Length: 375
Ligand code: COA
Image (cartoon, rainbow, N blue to C red):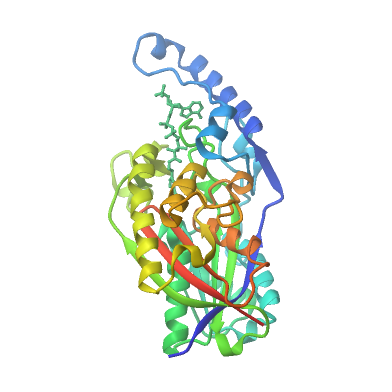
């Protein structure tokens, strides 16, 4: 068995930012338009009036201050409320592939590698731009990688599940170097017209290179162990899919064709599942919580992370032990824990231990214990 190691990471961050204040101004303008347009039905009691959003609530409930998006104008247009992307020809790079190539290029550079060194590509994300061909195969082709590629979707846990697949391939020898990318265009499946969740998501792409430890040319993080768990729940759900047109009213503008969640239930149910899994995973590897230098958690909600951190450490973790990036990026689905890892791991010394942990729809939880092995 070969030792797998993370040898490079990359983050592609879109250039456009939406602050909470900007988001709320657009949302409230949409609400006013909606209520005026449906004044008679609202007065008759047929439909409820929509209610304004509030930037103070958003920050207090989530810890989010802003989000990056690929198209700000479409999202903030109160007569539209979703991004506007140019239709691309079939022989042009697709949008997911384009941002994946940007993040992947950074990861390869950091690892001191070129496309020729990579054997496989995994595109792990919470939504794919099309049904087929697989996004990963297009990314493979754009980068000039030989070998094989495939897509996988475990919603917000896609990246840690992807790391485990890559680590297993390295361990067994079926691949020597695996590029795992997480292009998350969450603005495409967020319902920006729903006050309960319109502030949650942002766009980004992350990339992680996983190689045999002995092949590393620079700083590497050995993958000590991985653990995955899934448990079915509809509390985070999106009903969009290829059978849509077969069903009555299937192609209408329906709320359930975008991200939906029972936020309170998710919060209450997922926190103990994650804390229990992380605690057992560390214990089974003979690692005490105080041995950890850092936890890079999924970035959905600050209070959720505070609570998980407290349960795992047995005390409140410091900001250094549990850094958040969600104040700047919002929830970027599977990419969140990888952004945190990428931006907060430069200070690791050989022997330092950390855990990358993501969680979300499914429910799903993925935990990856890493040890810095230096250069
Ligand atoms: N502006 C102002 N008020 C709002 C609002 C908004 N944008 N959205 C909701 N509210 C109101 C609600 O109507 C409710 O009012 P009420 O008490 O009068 O009924 C109140 O604020 C609380 O709403 P609630 O939805 O219960 O908020 P919350 O504290 O649970 O926070 C989330 C909402 C989504 C931030 C939180 O539940 C969460 O983060 N859950 C976990 C999400 C998660 O991790 N999902 C995984 C995806 S990977």
